[in-house]
Image 1 (cartoon, rainbow over the protein chains, first blue to last red):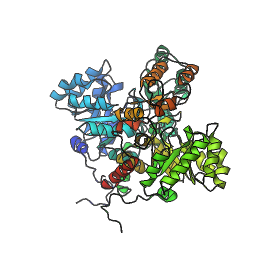
Image 2: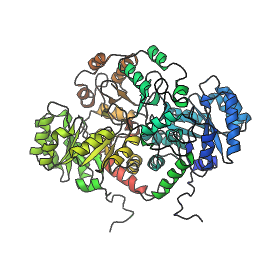
Image 3: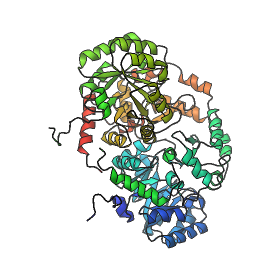
Image 4: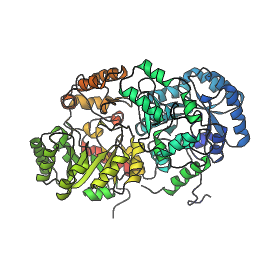
Length: 320
Length: 320
């Protein structure tokens, strides 16, 4: 029998069961940050690590999958955004490498349903609204990530926040809901569970962890952020939440001065995520990060992040 | 001794003690909706009702205060936005009428600190960021409302959400924090408390209650809203969250087409809140409402709202 005082005991939900993990804590598959090192560290600590395929070509993706398999003997998964040219190649690689947990985002899940279901994959799709949660359920996913506008990187157009999205998504679908956006510590973890989630997906705090592939400049910028330290850029052409770097301020000025969609697309340009997150250039690149950046106060190992969340969860069982 | 099964037993925090109320549930002092009828109904049910002074001239405000006093023998308060020409008149009226609970918003609290403190008033200021929470504490307030971008009506420029603002505000100040923005039911109530709040302020659900002065068209629009049913208009000139009415869609089109600040100010015009909320005109007026509108499903009495929140709170004591 497990002791009530054991602050590392498993947290059981439908999702920890589905993924066969100890804690319903999922590390988001962020571009340029979530490689095999990060994913395997999270999985090794009892959460679910995801390799972020969005910033990889299929061959590199395959390499990361193989390294993650070699590094950890615990379940891990991958994230595949569906809107890229190389997305079908990523999905094919994941299936061929026998990945059995796939998170998809940014696209229509129905289009890949046959492929995913016939491969027997545990499938989760990321949604920014209740309507998309219903569509994902109809497409046959096993769970949805309900991602609020707090989240880093690409966002829905409607700006629905975690606080409002999670309970409404949980009411709207029968499959389990994973909360994402704004979650950093045990408070956000527990609050999300009360709002109706059965797991949390955390991006920014893991992107700033030691095992993340993001540049030190990026991690430092996250740690240095306060509550107003991120900006929801490109709200009219495709919202992306970023740290308020020099480049972010240029975007904000353009937007406040009424820049046209064309001007904004030009300002966005190409390769900004790589330049920012991976190369550490905040003057010209995008530091994609969530509003929880204000709560990330140190660069620690991903395993320590998981343990901190679990300890806080059990320590505050009687907080209400 | 109170029974554990008594689902209407008091909920004790520093704020229920400060205000001498049974439940740390505060009804926001919304313009054109929060008159004496709504405030006294909430107070009578054990919460804290606030008369919204923003849409009243001092004489009318005084009348509402007197009627609220006659209608309920429980504590109630007022809300005074600090940026209007008639704001000093409202504060003077409140003091002369012996109001001892004043919530202020939208302005610099330090300017009125002497007046408020020498009147011995319990004083709360509403803030959209951690920096403003610290400033309010320094000015001598007894508590702050940490209001996320989910909230209806006027908002801060930085878009900090309830999920991220509440824990950071609670960490930054010693005085108690009241969470506002996106709270509708027991889930939001409890989640806010876990995030570090000691009370919640609820606007939209009360604005749609029977005793609210808002027009039936407004209440119906709130009830009919879904998760994406509000829009954060005028983000570049002074954000206001509104229901996506015909007028809201005109604003959104203008913003997406890069309207200048001047054009947006012109589009905003004057008297739009009254025309919308009070007169029920969604084609030309603003229906100010929070993102929680998607969760408001019926027009019921304010007392029933309070009882629903309290019942949910106690029914779900063991939810985690």
